[in-house]
Length: 266
Image (cartoon, rainbow, N blue to C red; front, side, top):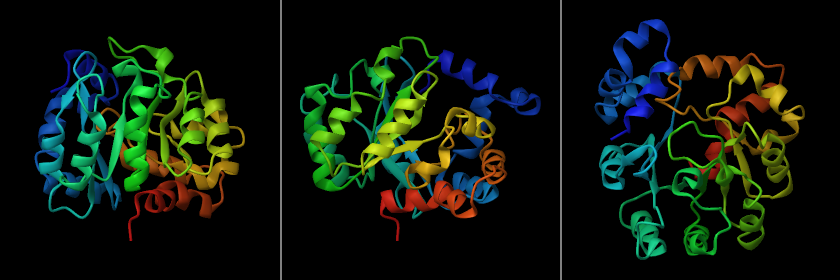
């Protein structure tokens, strides 16, 4: 379901031993079923994981919503997030409501750099209204992307300021925290808005304090993300975060406490 260039990028993130197997073999092994994925999570010391659908036919590929729903069904640990590409849907808000209320999705993932829209585009507002009404978080790709067809200008987190003002009860998660160009904007937006959060998937843990000099001031607003399988070394990255010179309470919030609150896990 991935485009060929996504596999090429994934290979570059593997160590030498895993490179010989290749990302497709890793996917076929680890994600063969929810049981094999949960076994991998156990090995990494992870209790819960979000599984993302994606409707990005011109950039990275398609992982259908129905596939993700079926994959996660029956699991208490795998939480499905749907993808609704408003360029492909006659009524994206209605589709989002159906996916959440009927298919059990726990959140929405938006891909502005892949779907070519600014996050404050009025065309997307009906989906924000539905998400706010249903109480589900919206995860938004922010920052750079290396994939063909992506347009980086749409990765700027700043338009999310409009969204946070217009939908004050909507939980917004900035995936990759403005990676590359806009770390400062992502950090400031998370501090400024009660329901805006940073997510640090794809960022080298050992450089977090360089990217965010006041990192610990946002302890209640930062969420660990793996970016698996593109960034496959979950356990290693968890240990690197635990090794940072931060308060133990801060580390626990980043590695689970904040996500539990946002996702409503009991």
